[in-house]
Image (tube, rainbow, N blue to C red):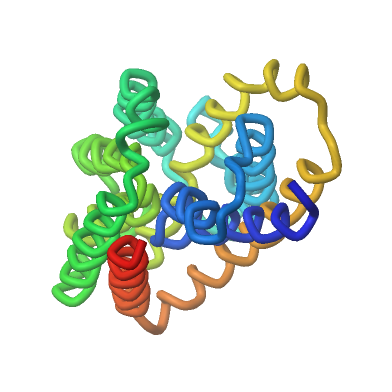
Length: 266
């Protein structure tokens, strides 16, 4: 892999991990469309490490507050977002379904789920559901009002992201909108919920990553994914505060049409 491919795939990972467009789908489609070799496990871990850096850079102070509150030592300062004492355990509960499904269906995720036509279907269907949920938005809850039931349902939706094209961010944000959680709170909860999943995926494959050796492509991938991931988080939170998620539906639909067209021509 050359540095150009590393930049392209790092950008795809950084944007796709946090925007509701599915990073896994894009990372499968890019080599398929351009005729590139599969980047392999080492580079995949590097990309996840980059997005882990991004989420910690943006939400580092928030995670300190969440951990303190969860351990009975709430932050007394009123700067930034307030997190109730149960928020840490809501995130733990919501992480369990995704971790279990990821463990049980890891092989399928690397084989049968990588079909371009399946990706086209999931991109368009989940995109439409996101559009519908956003259009019928009736915000009743903010971040502090998310319940245990909400956490279980959102966490179960996150488990569906094992299928490329569903999108971890897309599934969790869509579900949160259906539950009456406002747009910005839905995005923030989705990003915070991504942290343990990305962290776990990185740690589990860290030994293989280090054993394979870290070269220039991996370094470029990490830096690119971290930078674009940070920008994606900051941009989406600002964007949905005043606009909507509609643009992501149209993007997903256009990409699905393109996939079917390319597949038919080939």
